[in-house]
Amino acid sequence: MKIKIFSFIFLLFVLNACESFDEINTNPNQATDASIQVIFPGVTAAFVYGLNGESAQFTSVLMQYLTGVLGDQQQVNNYAFIADMSDATWNRFYSNVLLNINTIKRKAVEEGATHYGGTAKIMEAVVIGYSVDLWNDIPYTEALQLDDISQPSFDNAAGLYDRVQQLLTEGIADLNSESTTSPSTNDLIYRANNETLWRQNSRPRWIMLANAMKARFHNHLSKVDPAGSATAALAAIDAGTFASNADQPIVVFGSEFAGPWFPFFQTTFGENNVAISQRFIDLLRDRVDPGVDDPRLPFFVSPTTGGLYLGTPNGSASRPQGSVIPGPYLNSREAPTPILNFSELKFIEAEAALRAGQGARAAEAFNAAVAASLQRVTGSANAAYIEKFGSETAGSLTVEKILTEKHIDMFLQAEAWTDWRRSIPVDAPNSVSGIPNLEPSPSNTTQGLFPRRFIYPNREIVNNSANVPNVTNLDKVFWDR
Image 1 (cartoon, rainbow, N blue to C red):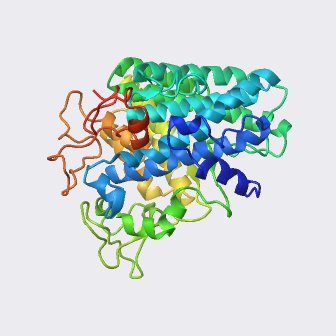
Image 2 (cartoon, one colour):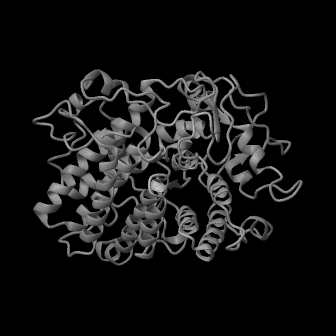
Image 3 (cartoon, one colour):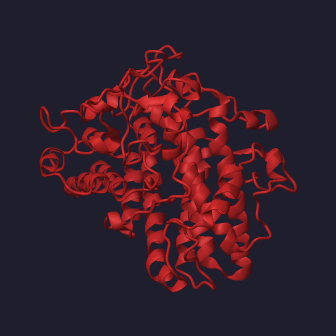
């Protein structure tokens, strides 16, 4: 979506994030006097960028899609987390997204703009759920009461997950209501040329996205409540969500401002600090047959001039001479920036259905997920791959197959780390891997123990020390038992 006004909006709302709740009190990014139509595109841009920015870089190192060879990324690769690794995502979510969503919701009530209010609530729900998945307890109830509270308390993570579902339900209700005005060309996620087309085509897809997010966050509770989470996830899907890749929200920032990954890979910071992990390349090489790779490999990873795929071993302090770089699927200016893909939804359905004892439904959903992933990444289905990995039956499908294929599909998405942690057996020590099976980084500083959460950002520790929980990266979020 090549919208020239985004140059200003993107700079205003995305790049100038505040660094603490004290700074939010005087945040120039809080557009309280701007119209709801002007505030909305900046919020959606910051929302999408936050989900795929710095936190996705670090979780991709933890999932060994990438290996960190320098700077903060190397620290994360060594499991020596530093507080600064959380600052950018935390600040963007609070100062650029949640603060301005508060304004959108207030203006939506005042103006009867319920469609704006509904979409804002959906984004708010996703940010809260995503933040809990990284940090567990976070400030919420008191976080944006800026006139009265500068040092907010932290809300209980399990209660926040309930709030996520409540916000998604409210968002759907708002979108099903009459509205005095609706988004249109200012909707980065489901853009339409005018309000009438937005109401016809985009509004139903926002509802689909809300139900898909309901399924995602219900499914996250697989270790806390295996049966209940499966039932709830399937009910959310049955309420109406994506039917194909065409329904998923794939954001293309355009030529003026690329999505998060391309500028990172193109700078010396990205080029020097991370490399494609040899582990991930090995997973995709010869996957179909000897000499026949996963068809997504050249899209995820660009081969060398000689057609080789030389990665970097996990834990290395430098990239080998001639090692590969990220491929064109994400390493291009107009690469898609995902929120929740149709393939992910079908993997969620497959996992939940298998847990619920609905084998036939699970297999059908899984096979659809594999085909949708191939289609999205490569532009076509691959008969040989589908025959080997996308033709499961009720009797042959396993959780390991689901999560392995989903891991490949979720390349460089933070959700992959959530899935991996969920698949670690209940009460297992931090030395035990989830699916896929990972080996701790050889350069780890935790005696071979895997991290299970982010630590809190440095600015929050300094400015809100009385309320910040005392944790390490070896502690778990509430759903990770």
